[in-house]
Image (tube, rainbow, N blue to C red; front, side, top):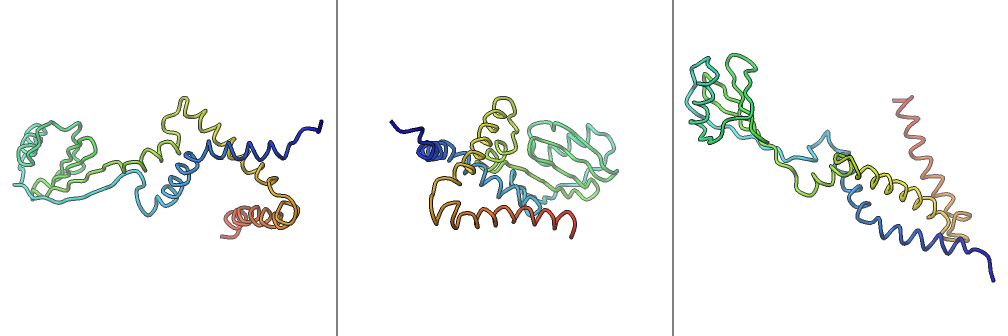
Length: 188
């Protein structure tokens, strides 16, 4: 009888946890790419803007402005909220849509935000918006990534393993975030 075959179990667990985690790896990877570039685009919503023209609204009364705006914009439901950022502008707020009306000219800016299907949901999971039990699922996934990283070090033996060329890849992979962090903190 031989002893415990840790290398064999390491390979089996690495493989099976990898298979189990593949969907979450893809979700977190795609979402990570999306939210890394938040300065360039909105990864959660498609934002559209449209300008339309209606007859000017000459009134200072909120109810009159809302009623005339709804008629002229052919809106069937009352807005969820109303705001006057300045004396010449009225804003009507609807779910996912805002109408900004220049009252003296009748120029209306319509801004709409629609969730990016699939990517919105991926980002919600990645950023733990659901909370609750999802927090524990995400924690388990994080632990599985740690295990995958460590166990992966010991899969190959010899010249291609950790004692051979693998150590150089580990060294470079470790140096990259470390050197960047030093640069980011002290040299930029």
